Length: 119
Image (tube, rainbow, N blue to C red; front, side):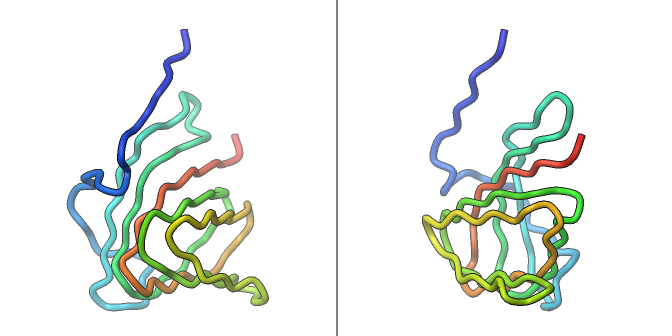
């Protein structure tokens, strides 16, 4: 049998304690996340993530990501340039496998994420 999962209001979901963002360029930037679901094979993970203002690097060379922005705002820029995007509530962002770049969080940001890696 396959179980159906449903999650309520993700904008107010408790994520747990905030911790320092390891790839941050900004002193004091912190993040929190809560994984909601993972496939049995570990290829796909879904959750909610929140981060305070600041700038950090991101590496999607082994995992692709789909983000739906729930609150806050940020600018996301690719390492190679030419693909800078300003994002905010309601936006959907796709970071394809192989993408590398930086996020600049302008207002504390909360998003849902779907991470998919190669099996």
